[in-house]
Structures are given as structure tokens and as C-alpha cells.
Image (cartoon, rainbow, N blue to C red; front, side):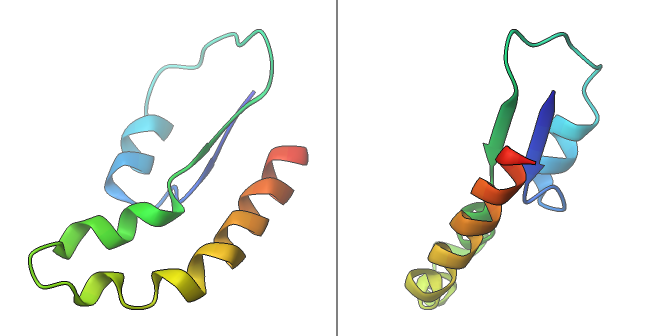
Length: 66
């Protein structure tokens, strides 16, 4: 089983579009922080990361357990 947090990100869509595989154990990929990587040149994309990361991490953990 593969679950992805941040599936609407560019990399999330790529992973979701991959052919299904048989995993030895459930796999969860957390791409929630990837959104901040899109505008590294101006620094503004990182300004709220410290506030949003705990919530996205909790959501990723919930999704991984589900």
C-alpha cells in the first residue's frame, strides 16, 4: 500500500501516476513540505513553514496509520 501526503504537488502527481507495486509493508511518502521548494530564490516561501509543518506532519502520520 502506498499513501502520499502532498499528492497535489508536482512530485506527488508523479508518484501517484506510477504503476501499482506490491510493497512488503505499507509505505507513506510525506511531500507536504515540498510546496516551499518552489520559490527558494525569494525566501518568502519558507516564512510559514515552521507554522505549517507540525500540522502537515500530524496529517501525514494519521494517513500513514489509516
